[in-house]
Image (tube, rainbow, N blue to C red; front, side, top):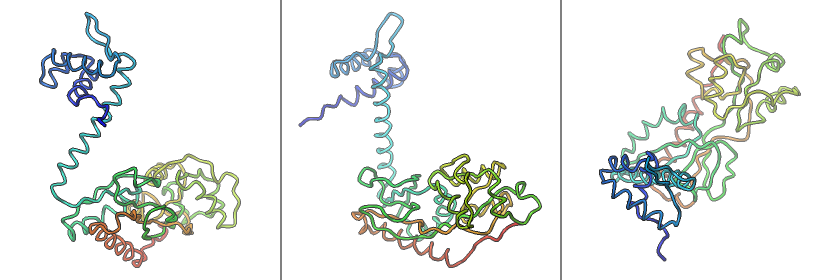
Length: 306
């Protein structure tokens, strides 16, 4: 059955006319005559049985239906353009579309990714931020790196590393002290991580403390946001040291207490079962697991900075 879709030319003409609210400007942008734009809009309105513009001697103005439709059309045309450019840019290379939790991707994965590119120049890895699980069937992702318990239906999981966050703060908050006790930390503003809402409660419980306000404080979705807030003296944060190596080395952040929060959760590479036989993904999986294993063997846990 034929799809109920207007012509591409009519949609492009409408999107340009709606954006400018001018048939004349749309014609100039698309190198068409004003008459051609008028005909395309008229044919689209006839196809939809909906008036998209109100015409007057002073020009044209979108109707409410026209405004709503123009936004949807613009979004879909943008998506088609992105997909087209993506296909054009592949040039025969093998592509891996990887969803990755943001701070892990920028602070740990990206500095190592050049090594994979040198070993496998025929494979291109594209990274996109995702903070929570999703349905692979609804996306174009080939794999994902996320933090959790590997309970992701229809996937093959590969454990990379744990997290072990520690309390960190700015040197100004620490002052002349070499560290802070759990009780002293409890008196400070607690910076919360949106995807780990019970982190501070779990940390205080591991110190045999029950702090009523352990879940209060501003919430941030990314560890990079937590780090920025902590550096600006907004409070104390629980952050895995391997995600803030530069900040610790430059003493923009310091470890306030060396007791780490242990968790059964970890960073995993998740590959949908239908993709596990991909040669490119197998190469990336083997490289990534080896990188994570080598990093864990290094045992590079930062010491408290005084």
